[in-house]
Image (cartoon, rainbow, N blue to C red; front, side, top):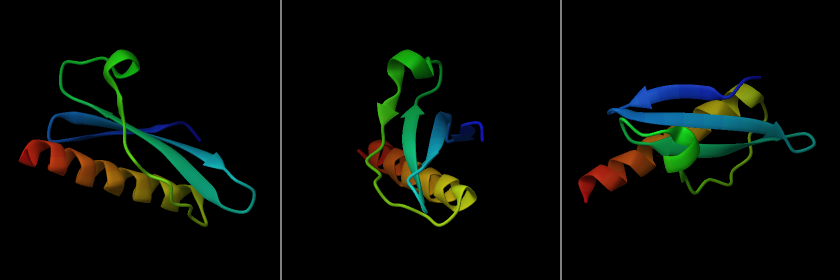
Length: 74
């Protein structure tokens, strides 16, 4: 599946899933408005696994939302 790219509070979220045997994991990146994802992306701390690719995408996106909210609260 292609990487999931969504927006949240003017930030872009990219979730890249991969199979880890019987489970799925995700690499989660975010970057602010007006920035390029390839150069300005920040890696979101996330190391959970899920039973499906769709669940891994959803969990990775939620981790990104929490990460963005914590950055904006500072």
